[in-house]
Amino acid sequence: MPAFNESAHLGDCLDALLEQRRYIHEIIVVDNNSTDDTAAVVLDVRRRFPMVTLVAESERGVVHARNTGFDHADGSIIGRIDADTHVGPGWAKSILDFFDRRLDYAAVTGPIHLYDSPWAAPYRAFVNYTTKRKADELQVSAASGNNFAIRRSAWQAARGRVSLRTDLHEDIDLSLCLYRVGLRIAHIKSMCVEVSGRRLLTPPLEYRHYVLSSYRTWAHHDLVCNSLRRLLIADMVLHTLHWPLTRMLSTCESRILPVSHSDTSVESDRRLPSVHNVEFAAAASGK
Image 1 (tube, rainbow, N blue to C red):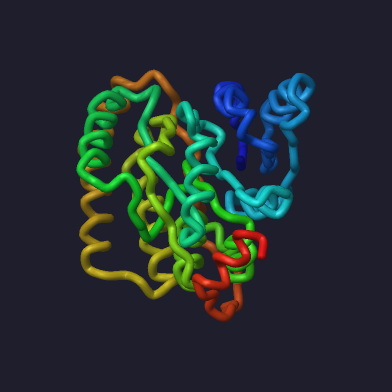
Image 2 (image 1 turned 60 degrees about the vertical axis):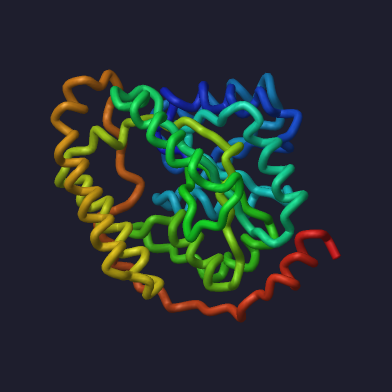
């Protein structure tokens, strides 16, 4: 769980996870240079639940915090959520059950609802409606980092490919790196979470940078198409339309966007040989 100045949300996030500790080996919070009481909140919970671990990552950026957390984890399945995520009942068990049954998948995600937002109820209805019309398990091209789990063997296969650029969406980048090495991501209905609606309060001009980062990430993998352009434009327009009313009705504060506007770092392309599904299945089953 990457965290930057998340003391206001971490307590509820950890409480939801600890209710499912029967199915969770460890909980790792990566403090990414917080200036508030983020570390203190984690250490207070750790005194009561030693399975909670605090790890520091001094290099700013969600991608660096995520990599540190993933590399620090020692389980065969690595969960990934944000510090404002509330996992739903049965979240952890549904992940373990899925990976036990489906060796042909490397990662998994699920439905995402909102809380602390004036649009929480209609958004939940929309998600439930669209989810109901889909299969219980289906393949998707990318997964959101606020509700994600991956096999350790898959992370190791993609680790050398992930970009360190902070102007990209690290969750989309990782998803597309998995795709590049022949590994699949599933969406399952039983893996539900709620996340804060803080991002909906982002001013439209600032939100534009967030959407451009999405485009930039897909372009980084040479996977941009016209349908993606239309989708991102529609996202920006919809956000601009609802933002004034959202700002008036909301009681929460806006969040800092998890991507920078640009990244001038020079990064060489790293390529790994493709991993065939048979090889992955063997690695996942410990053979």
